[in-house]
Amino acid sequence: MSASHAEKTAMDLPENQFVTLTFHDVRDDVARRGDRDQYAISTEYLAQYFSWLNREGWKTISLKDIRRAREQKVSLPAKSVLLTFDDGALSGYTKVFPLLKQYKLHAVFAIPTSWIGTNHKDAIEAYGANNLMSWDQMREMQSSGLVEFVSHSHDMHRGVLANPQKNTQPAATARIYNPKTARYESDQAFKRRVMNDLKRSKEILERELSAPTHAIFWPYGAVTPEVEDIAKQAGLNMSFSLGTMAPLADSVKTYQRALIMNNPNPAEISEAMADFLYHTKQPYLEQKSFIQFNLQDLSQPTLKQADEKLSQFLNQLDALKTNQLILKPVADLDGNGTIDVTYFPNRQLKMQQDLLNRTVWQARTRTYQRVYAELPLSLANQGYNLVQLVEDMFKYNGNLEGLVIDAGKELNCAIETSQWSDDCKKQIQRVIDLKQQSGQQAKYYANISNVYLAVLKIKTNKSIGLKHLFDNLLDDADYIYLVVDEKMNKAEHNQLLKSIQLLTPVQKQRLMVGFDLAGQLNKDQWTTRRIADLRKQGIQKISLENYNFKNAGHVQQRLYASISLNGNPLAYRDPFKAQGEHQ
Image (cartoon, rainbow, N blue to C red; front, side):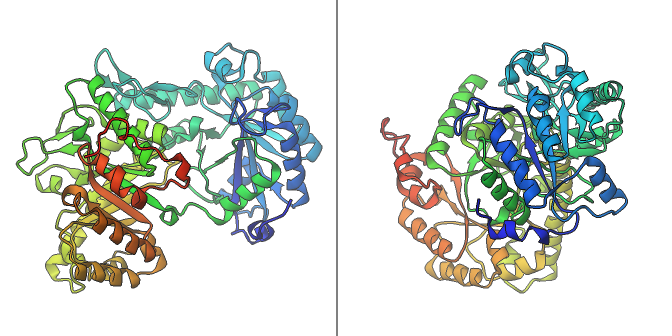
């Protein structure tokens, strides 16, 4: 096994940083690729990996080690790894425990307490009948000093009804939708349900294993700061989700765990560890292609008809092979220039149809999109409480990745010139204040396993103040989203390229450039050339603004090469070709 440079220099880890890996079932007969259980790893590979850990000087740590590092500032070993196993599969006792004893390693097992000693249908579906550890086996493992057990909830390792279209989503974060009353679970009922579950899980673990339980490993990695607070109140003040970050022991927030999938061999696991350690979450480095879409285009007389339109839209996205979706969940139905309806439950505006949750979930699970919601700053000018609206939106849509604030023309003064007047500075500060306040609310209800991003959207063809804007906003915005239209002339385009050249590499990665399709359908060559110019300047975030069913065929036919992230030309398919639907 050859070691990468990152692996060879692992001793250079920042103090108290550690890797957390999450395994599930272990079997002798796991297929090298395409096994029936994508989360299973072969006994042979796990043994080889344990041997590699010892050979390379890695130390397996316990939750107690992490608590001491966090609370007493005691340093962790230089090369620390936390091994975790979820769900309580019988292989934890028959396969993993013997290997832990052989290699003298420590591990943590997360137990859904309602599964143990029962015929729970979810447990049988996951692992088959009689294929979980017993309490006696867990007591034997714990007495070895090599194993500790934590909560994986009592009965939240399942989905609950989360919208009128009958999607099931993680029980720990979704507010349950009641189809009989057409209402969602109240805040009080939600908190009471989660609290009771966690308290019951903790009580059962402590009674059966005679040891205190302080940690919760969230099912599916689904956790928000809201439920993190509930867990602390239930006595579970160590929280673990899923993700790709190598966390720091002194973090006061939920730790992230890397999920082991597709039966990796030791070389593949060690390479993944290096990625976790040296390429921690920096989402601005990723190439992204955005499609911006108005939920008003999905609204139909019935939810069934709306769902048919959604399937049509997602089929188009899947063919485009873009990876980021911006949804507009509010609309101006009467065309008078003011927002009058939403497509999500809220306390201020009329909900035209409950579409946002379904669209976000389907886009994530069917086409693997990261989904953002866009709200216009004009809502605040209309007298609505924008921060409260954001709170309501994320409360019922915790799977959103972030928020796009359409600043209208309020930030144009900041980008069209590098000389800011006092009035301009006041406008900038107002936008930043609203962004920060709404971000605090959004993050409280957003899934911690995602990377929340805030985006400030500016629509103008002038960019002379772009560098000045970035330099003075500092970290106040994760992205600046500049939208240009077909009226941009050659001089303005060249100015944009010059402005981009002045940006630092990080600033370039935080710049999105969008092309408004409303007036550009007959200028696809213009758009293609400008996108190519931007990519040459290192701009990796490109968006198509105002994508809709009318221009979808044109985009597929004329702009696919510019916007698609499809790396395999043989996988290309045109969803319009058979129907002759090109516009």
